Image (tube, rainbow, N blue to C red; front, side, top):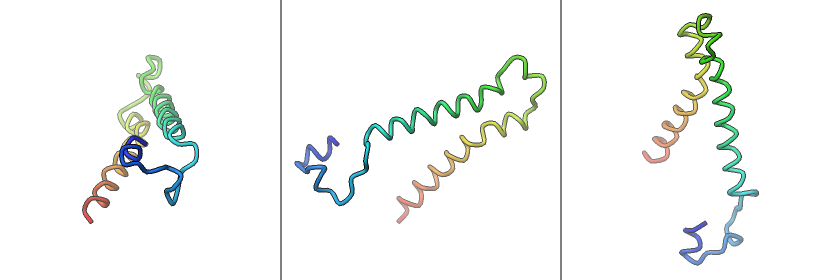
Length: 81
């Protein structure tokens, strides 16, 4: 938004304008953080630590690895061309 203002471009003149921005992006970021936190909270419960082994802990945070992999591969594909 600041870049458009600095260049004197109105947002309504763009070919596509995403609805509910920038609030939808913030909502998605916060919601993803909450889901990741509660997905992994089970691993650190003191009552469950004796039951869980390393494989279960790795499985709990599998989503974090997938998101990181997609981010890195997407950036590589975008900037290599």
